[in-house]
Image (tube, rainbow, N blue to C red; front, side):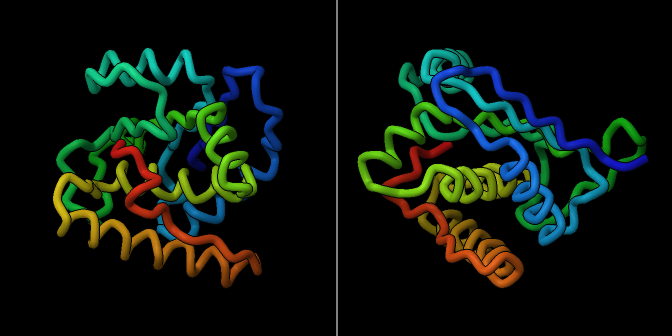
Length: 170
């Protein structure tokens, strides 16, 4: 079974280049060695991500990214060891593309590069990384730096991880 990346666009505010996002996600999966795991990426507007944020995190504002790991007890950097085929799943990432577009406009950044960086951040959450403490942040930041360094080497791009002030703790 080849794993599926399900990329769904449930918003009409931001024109998305889905083929590029899919290609970037495949590159990230390759770097992390998680090609055999299913992964859901859902692009949503502010209203939808605010709803999800409020429901699951009791935070009633839109945000950049929310991750829902399939394997919740993972230690950072450890891949899941599924016993069954239906456990070959990393989980789902909701990308607040409207929120991100506004951030990109305010900081004159490229939306699609930013989507890749934020997706890398989301995948790290699916793989057990957290940033509730300074120490966890550093560990996650190092992992993202490595992933994006490899991504840049493979694609000739020049992406950098989310900095502490941008990332709204997801």
